[in-house]
Amino acid sequence: MLLGVVFVVSAVLKILDMDKFEIYVYSYHFFSLNFSFLVARAAIILELVLGIGLISNCFHKLMWWGSVVMLVGYTLLLIYAQVIGRTDNCHCFGDFLQFNPWQSILKNLVLLALFVLVYKVKGWRFKGQWLALAGVVVAATVAVFAVSPPDNFTPSYAPESNLQTEYFDQALSEPPLDSLDLTNGKQIICFFSTGCEYCQMAAHKLSLMQQFNGFPPENITYVFMGNEEGMTKFYEQSESANYRSVLFEDVVKLLKITNGNFPVLVFLENGRVVHEYNFRNMREAEIEEFMGK
Image (cartoon, rainbow, N blue to C red; front, side, top):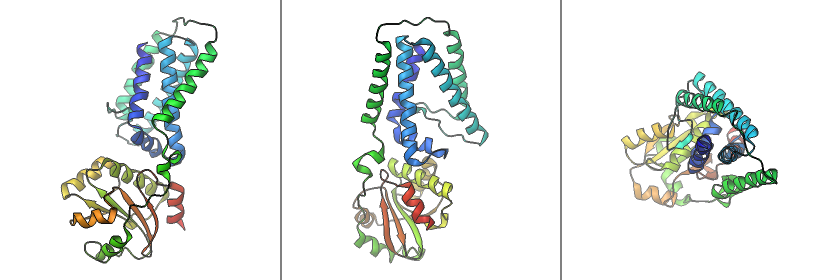
C-alpha cells in the first residue's frame, strides 16, 4: 500500500506540474514536442494504474513486474542524464520535491529494494477483475486528459494574436530595437516579463528547439519587461540559452505592443510578421519549416 501511495502521489504531483514535465520529456529529444505531450501523460497514467493496483493488492504479480520494469526504465534514463551532465530536477515528484538525477537514482534503488521485500505477497482475486482493471485504465486516462489536456488538443493551440502590429512596427524603428537590425532576414523576437513563469517555460521550449534544430542563435532576441536583476534570474530559472537581450524601459509602450499579454513570440522575415505564438500554441514543425527554408 505504501508503494502504491508513492506512485499515486508521484502521478498527481506530475499532473500539477504538467507544463514543466512536458518540457522535461521533450528536453531529451527522444520525441517531438507534440509526441512529448502524449508520452508525459502516458507515464502519469501508468503510475496511476500501478499505484491503484498496488494499493488494492489485485493482480499482484502484474503490478509488481510493471512497477519494477518502470522503475528500472526510469533509472536507466536517469543514469543517462547523469552521464551527459544534467543536474536539473527530474520531475519525479513535480516541482514539489526537486531531485537531481543522482538523488532520484538513489530514491529508485530504495523503492526497488522495497519491491523485493513484497515480491511473495499474495494478491486477491475476484470475479470480473479484468473488467475492473480495464475500468481503472480508462478512468485514469480520462481523468488525466480531462484535468490536463495536451495543448495541441485544445482551442488554445489555435492561432491567437496578441501582437499589436501598429505599435510593434513603430517600436522596430525606435530605441532600443532600432539598432538591432531586426527587419533583415529571419528574426525571432520574444516579448517576456522577467517574473512570468509561462515566459520562462516558453523561453526554455524555444531554446530547446533552437539547440535541437540548429537555428542561428544570433537571430533570436529576448525583449524584457523588468530590470537587470530580473533578467539574470530569468535565464537561471528558465534554463534557456543566453540570447541577445534587451530591457524595454517604456513599460506602457511594451504593454501596448503585446496587448498586455506575455509571452509573445514573433517570427519575422524581412520585417514582415510570419508567425506569432504564445506559450500554449508553439508549433515545432511550423517553426522548423520557417527557420529551415
